[in-house]
Amino acid sequence: MTRLVFIDTETTGLDPVQHDLWQMSMIITDEAGNVIETKNILAKPNNIENASEQALKVAHITRKSLESLPNRYDSYREFMETLIRVCAESGGKVTWVGYNNKFDVQFVDKFCREFDFGFDLWNYFSYISIDMLQVSMMLKAMGFINTENLKLEWVYKNFDLGLDTAHDAVADANATRVLYQWLRYIIGKGLQNVIK
Image (tube, rainbow, N blue to C red; front, side, top):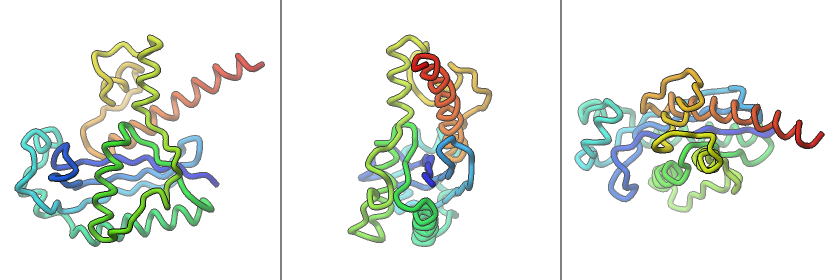
């Protein structure tokens, strides 16, 4: 059983060297994007004083709120226990699905290496991931997306998919999942017509 894991993070800034993730959401689905499980993992950042004012503003969170988040090691254990279990249930590696995967991969990798220096994400995730930003870039080049930029919320509204994204990892992971499901359906229907 192949499992897709839609991952999104919220961080204290854009630089994985000086900033930390503080929220990581995982929506585990089947290949069609039907939800099996949702995890919302919160973790107190190491360097709250380095938090970017812009990142705090976008996520509607304060330094004081970040101080009260759970211990990072407990959050790491929750992430790893979930990931190991889902890999076992699927009979091997799972597929990472996200929106701008490079950003989230860097922060998740850094987070895990805090507790396991030899950690390798790709022992759990297939090397072939699905980045809906890359799909959106192709669709924009083809004229199907008419927005001034390719931020998730803009692409989502372009297709009038009905949910608001709110710079919350759970909401953004779910928006990515809905976008994936919708495009999977549309592309599948189109290819069926062409291949017939």
